[in-house]
Length: 225
Image (cartoon, rainbow, N blue to C red):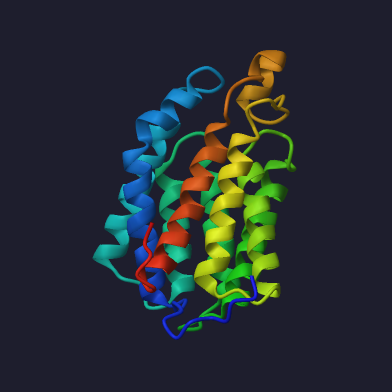
């Protein structure tokens, strides 16, 4: 983690946010059937379709009227998700992105540390809205370890691309860790012990969005995995 940032380190600007949105939309579309499959035994079997509809609408809205700062772009995406994604996912993901965008403010660029702080503000807002915490088998089980890994990596001297790669790994591990958990929030909680043994679809889609951030950063360094 002590590798100095390269001269090709990505800049957190509007173009970075656009790359994230394009990558996230592609990932959600590609994984929509899997998300719905995960949602079938413990939810309404519509998470993949809902997320695909929401991100497609957000991408189209941003293309029609392009925001000129990364913060405004995220706020715009959040608004679209709230208005187009059904169930609890729309308000939760909408809050995540709106609060992150507002935390970035009106600046044309942000430092990696400012991005990390803004993501933390967005995750905290999701926790407050849903009344959930890590271990409840929700999207927070991917988002919280991701933001913690990002902050740890940046504090250790990593550049943005490396730090977001660490966040991606933490989010993936967090989503996988929901399999043995007992759901304590949302529709899955109604199933009690029957919720055990299933990966949470919200944590899985959250990990996709974190992975899209890492890809957006990697694209600037020639490592867009």
